[in-house]
Every structure is written in structure tokens, then in C-alpha cells.
Length: 84
Image (cartoon, rainbow, N blue to C red):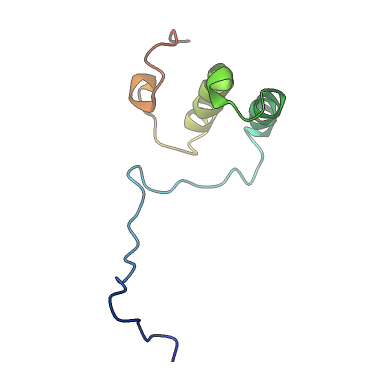
């Protein structure tokens, strides 16, 4: 029986992400910038704090192409990076 639960096991209840979901970039509008960000991560052994400019550029591209809601960068964790 696949729906049976073990005694004491809590039931998993999924919750949506805070910002909701956003569409995939099927047309590759931001692919060049995403690749630049991924290369930065690779070159820095996955240390994303060294790739913040690239991450901000990628999010800006997604916002410009309506792949995510426009949001102030300070609310996305980029308060310390100058606005472009």
C-alpha cells in the first residue's frame, strides 16, 4: 500500500516558494548571461559570493524579458552593489 504511513511519521505537505514560480527561458533570451554566471561559478569552485555581479546581470535580464517580476535589487540581496 503506497499511501500507508509509518507510525510517528509526519505527512509531507509541500509549500510554494515565497516569490512563486517563474517561466523557463525557452527562447534563450538570457542564455549568454546565464552561461557567463555558470562559468564564474565553475572558475570559483562554486563560491557564488564571487559571482554576484554576474548573478545581478542575469536577474536583470530575466526581469527585462518578463521571465520574472520586476523587483528592486535591494530586495534580492544586492543592496551593497551599485545600481546599474
